[in-house]
Image (cartoon, rainbow, N blue to C red; front, side, top):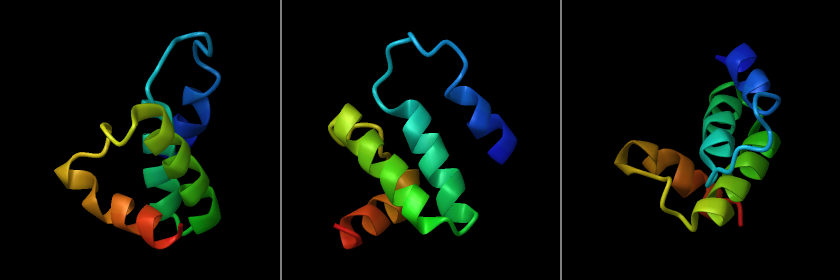
Length: 69
């Protein structure tokens, strides 16, 4: 998953998105224990999507992000 996430930022960088890439990258970083990187990605995802990308299955990531602010 980490290898895939590393590639999503170089694939079609001009494509408009609303934080989906950062959300996935934040989830992977969180699960790998890189909490500083996870916070950075999740914060960007939250800003780009205005919180809309975080679904019920992402509750622990949103809680982590709110706890770190």
